[in-house]
Structure formats: C-alpha cells, structure tokens
Amino acid sequence: MDTQLKKGLLDVCVLSVLREGESYGYKIISDIAPYIEISESTLYPILKRLESVGAVTTQSRAFNGRLRKYYRITKKGLEKIDEFIEDVREFERIYRFISGGERK
Image 1 (tube, rainbow, N blue to C red):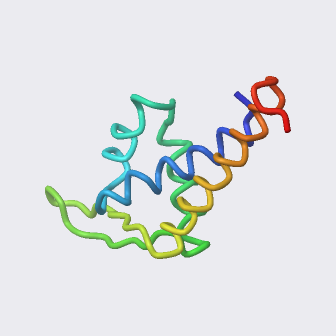
Image 2: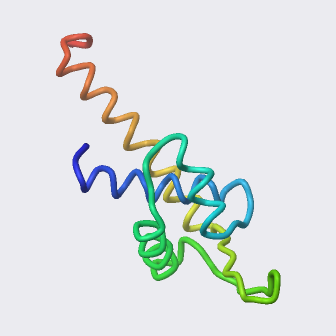
C-alpha cells in the first residue's frame, strides 16, 4: 500500500477508535491491529500530529503508580472522519469509472 495513503488511513483509524471514547496508546493499537498494521513507533507521532492540529486532546492520569496519557477526539477530529468518508465516496466513484463499471 502507498505510504501516504496508509498514513492518511492510520490517522482516520486512530480517530475512529477515539470516536468510541477516550483511550490510551496500547489500547488504540490493539483496537486498530485487526484491520491495519500499526506499531507504537507509528502511533505516537500520529497522536502528536493529531493533537497539534486540534483533532485530539490529551489528559494524563495516574494508573498503577505511573502516569498514562489518555486521548480524546475533538469536534475537529470528528470533522476529519466525515471528510475522509466523503473522500472515500469520491474515490469509489472514480474507481467504478476506471474499472469500467460506471460510464456516463
């Protein structure tokens, strides 16, 4: 899969996990792993980037004697998911055209 395409997909996968409720790194990875390969070294830069654009917020809380960072999706993050869904719909129309399934 194209690296740039995968990067965009991973961003939206992370946001989709967070749409279900706040979460932390390891849990996000385990929720995404059945669908697309992701590692810690890939996830944390994504989370940092999403935070920098205002798509997620963070909060640190104590868990088993150490701090754990929890991530929560914002309105902007939800909008990014909606934009992605619209992009996929457009991509599907183009795919049908290319594959010969839809000619006008």
